[in-house]
Image 1 (cartoon, rainbow, N blue to C red):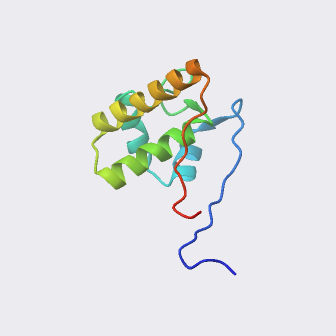
Image 2 (cartoon, rainbow, N blue to C red):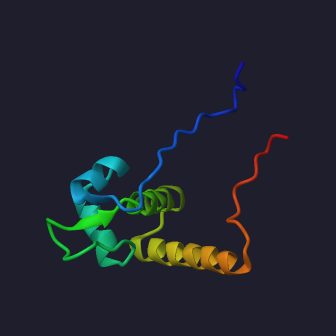
Length: 111
């Protein structure tokens, strides 16, 4: 029997070699193409190759766009703020990797 406060988390493995189009990125993250273009403009994500209608993104970009979307929703950050926060989170991950520490995960409030 599940706890009333528990929730189910669904995850999908992302292949780092797979590329996705703007349309696929929009569909995966439930955002519009204009917001993706704004993320590119502010340096939050980078297309592979030339920017434009035919540009492609690493499938890992889906994770970054989802984080950006949560930052905007949860903290009402603007795009420059999102870019700064994501850069700082990347820096923290890099420093932890240099120290040989795994990334910290949120601790469960339940024992």
